[in-house]
Length: 576
Image (cartoon, rainbow, N blue to C red; front, side, top):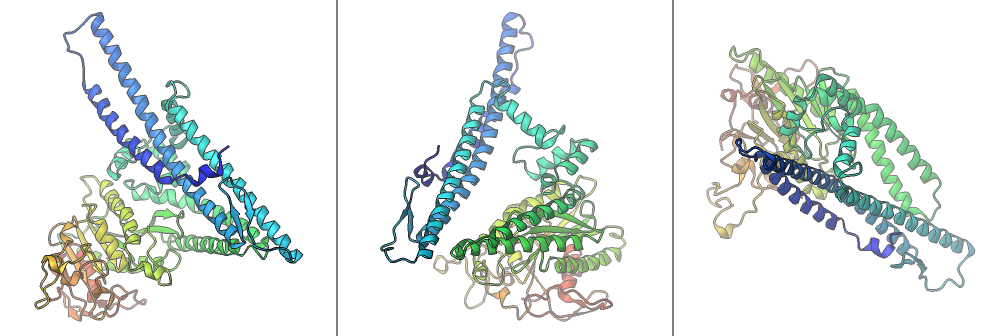
């Protein structure tokens, strides 16, 4: 049985380090395996010795394949154990907090000690309450130790497989059984495969295998970057009723637990209230998604309910085949249940304008436009303490790590017969997310920023003579926007004159002052075809949903459509 003192010394970081070391070793062994596979005996070498050498080479190759497979399964086990250990340590912290609040202490041996100074004259009801607290602490400790033992046993089992003889219980057989359980008769996808590798894997599957995976493994297919959007959407739509049932069950259990709490269990009551609110918001998000998906021209590209809030990405038009595609990332205070539907409708409005631009040109008439609103991250909310996160980079860095492979996946899903001009766009905090993602991917052909608090990530150092703006002329000395992997001349910025967010430079140099980025107008203007365009004001008006029958068009929306349609000759620039 795992001891409490052992659990206190556990560290997810140690498991992560072990997993990283094994991953490095697996890569080295894979290279050795490739060398063996490339080797062969001389063609004119025949006889017993040649056959013996060939058998020895095959045996060494088989042994290495078994070892590489076993190491891969061990890495998965370590990763799972790391997550489980983190959850156990969180439970330990909660138990310690409860103990301290009620003047108890949990010893290194896992015993509960009452450290109250004087309980001689304590009322009987308080004594009973303290006894109940002590009993709950003992239950928590027992549950934590049971879970710790399970984690320990799982790791021991995984190590036993790795050191097995390669037979029925060896790593190769174990992974084969796991793959069969996960992927049916279809070959398993590349372990930690890139979007292009995932796209190549999907291309090798039969129609029957693909349909089986979509129907029976929708939770995996729906989130795989590199797969066709239609396949992901079909899988994610199948998940909606399943996820709703799961959340409803969790909600009922939490509400029942809360009703049975004693008055002194206020800490648990507060935790349950937060968990209940999160699940209710996720259920509201499912309602919102189902409402949005009533339009058959939309696709549910991403659906993730594992975080604190729901995350999703909605496509409009045929994202798989359209020649012009935009991916728009919203900023702060954006949620699936709150305003994702409005963003989708606004970008469909821009999509329609971009389509008109293509249709009006005989050289592009017949091309199609599609759009994606990507909210597969959790931007800060406009409330304390979330508001403070708006000045930090953590949230958009996490978002960028998701956005970059998503963009790569869109490109990987295309073949040479269906080229795509991809525009990555973002508003406010979403523009910072986009700017960082574009440092990790070259998938985008253009980038468009709305009301950006900065898309550069260099802290200016005036004493170094670089990384700042000249105080007299305002001329750029140096920025790092060139690190975005977008073709030269294809970075664009929109900034309303009275948008204070776009001028604060929270996350790098103000794009309006960056000479590598083309500044587009948001003022009153006249389009190339004579259409009068109106100015936009404030931080949230770059694209605004119009009332039915209202055909007015803002300069900001017009310029956004021109970038997406790749009609650079129609752009209206803003003099600096």
